Amino acid sequence: MDGTQARAETMNGAESLVQTLLDSGVDTCFANPGTSEMHFVAALDRIPGMRCVLGLFEGVVTGAADGYARMAEKPACTLLHCGPGLANALSNIHNARRARSPMVNIVGDHATYHRQWDAPLTADVEGVARPFSDWVRYGQSSRGIAADGAAAVQAARTAPGQIATLILPADTAWEPSAGPAKPLPVPPRVMPAPQQLETVARVLRAKGAKVLLLLAGPALTEAGQRAAWRIAAATGCGVLAQMSNARTARGQGRYPVERVPYPVDMALAKLAGYEACILVGAKHPVAFFAYPGKPGSLLPEGCAVHVLARPDQDVLGAIEALAEDVAKGVAPPAPNGGERPRAPGGAITPEGIAATVGALMPEHTIVVDEGVTTGRGFFAATHTAPPHDWLQLTGGSIGEGLPLVLGASIACPDRKVIGLQADGSGMYTVQALWTMARERCDVCVVIFSNRKYAILRHELMNVGANPGRTALDMLDLGNPDIDWVKVAEGMGVEGALAPDLDALADLLRGAMGRKGPFLIELLVP
Image 1 (cartoon, helix red, strand yellow):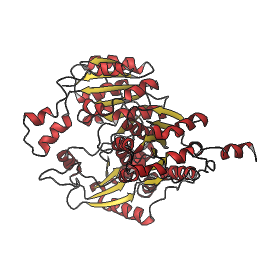
Image 2 (cartoon, one colour):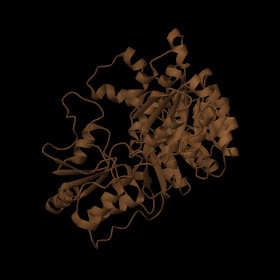
Image 3 (cartoon, one colour):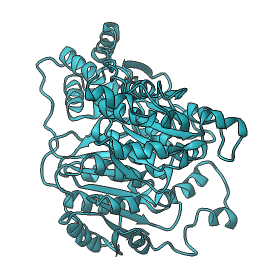
Image 4 (cartoon, one colour):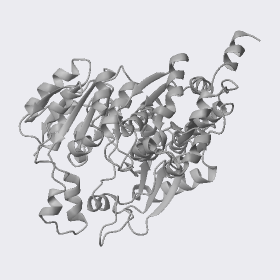
C-alpha cells in the first residue's frame, strides 16, 4: 500500500468530499456553516487547496457563488447549514439558476439516525432544494459521499450551467470513507440539428429586416456579438439582447447591443414590426409581470418564433455557423469606437451617472448592475467606455448586487469591480460589505440613495392600483434615513457621500486609483 492509498483510506467522508471537489476543479467555497458542517470545516484545514470565503448571511454566500461562476466560468461550492440555512440562501440560488450559473451547494444536515427525533433544525431539506435545483442528492453513507460530490460537480458543469445540491448528513462527514472519487467527464455542448440552422437561414433570407436576432448567454460574448452583427450586415435583421443577462461583453471594440426594455410599453414599441424572432440562447421575450389590459408576450401578434440554439446547446457555435451561411464574405460593421464618455458634472441624472462611470472605469472593469430604476438607461451612455463586462440581476429577486460584486472580485482579483446598487435592494444583503473588507476585494460600490423602493412605486401605477398613505409608507425608506457611509464603515469599508455628479467623479477617480473596497452613497433625487 503506497502513501497516497494509505491517506485515502484514513480519510473521513468530509475529507474525501473536499478532495473530490478539488480534483474536480472546485477550489473556492463560500460558506456560512453550522454545527452539522463542522467536520467539513475541519476537513478544509486538513486538505489544502480550497479557498474559503465566509459570508454572514446565506444569501450573500449563494449570490457570491453566482458572481464567481459568471466570471470564473466554473462552479464554486457553497456550505450551508440545514434546511433553514438553505431556505435563507434560496433567493440568490433562484437568481443563479436564471443566470445559468454552475453551483454546487453542500448543505449539512442532522446525522441520518438523528432525524427520527425531530430536533429543532429538522426539515425536509430535499423538498426545500428541489424547486430551486437542477440536481439534488441526499448523501447516504460516508463511503459514497465522495462519489456523490463528483456527480454534483458533473451536474453543475453540464450545459448551460446547473444548480447541484448535495445534502451532507453529519455522520456521512465524520465516519470513515473509501477515499476521494475520480472526477466525472462533463458532457460537451452539442450543436443544434442542421434543420434548425437551415430553417433560420431561410427565414433570414426571406424576411430580412423584419427578423430579430435575440441574444443571450454565449451569444453575448465578444465572438457571439461579432457573428450576430455580421448576420445583421448581410440581412438587415435587428439585434437585441434579452431583458436580463448574466454577462455581456461591452465597450470599445465590442458592439452596441441594446436590451429588450423592462417597461412593457417601451418593449412593445421596441419589438413592433418584427415578423419573426430568432432565439439564440434566449427565451421568448415576455413581460416581467401581468398588467391589466396588456399582453404577456412582448412580440407583435403573429410574429413567428424560431430557435437557433437552446441555452444548453452550442450557442456560440450555432451563431457562428449561421453567420458563415448567410453572411459568408461579409465583414461585420465597425465595433464601438470614438471617444469614451465624459464626466458631465452638475446635477444627478441617470444618464450623467452612466457617463461618469463610463468616463472613469479602467479597462476590463466588471460592472455589476442592480440599479433597478436608476439604472435602466445606463447602456446607451456606456457603449464607448473602455472594454468591460456587465453583469445583471437575472432572476428578478432583488438583493443580489452586493454578493455578485463580491463573487466577481474573488474570481477576478486583478480586475476592478464597480457595483451600481439601488439602496433598497442593497439592504437585503448588506452583510456582503463585511466580506469585501475581510477579503480586501478591489471593488467600488455606488449606492443610489433615493430612500425609497422606486421600482415598486412605478409598479403601483402600472398595475392600476390607487395608493394611499399606508401603501406609500411601505415603499418609503426614510424615517429614518439609512446612512450608507456609516453602515459601510461599520462593516470595515471606507465610504463617502456624493451629493452631485462632480463629487461622484472625484470619488470615483480616487477609488479607481487605489486598491481595496470603497463605497459611494450617491444622493439620487
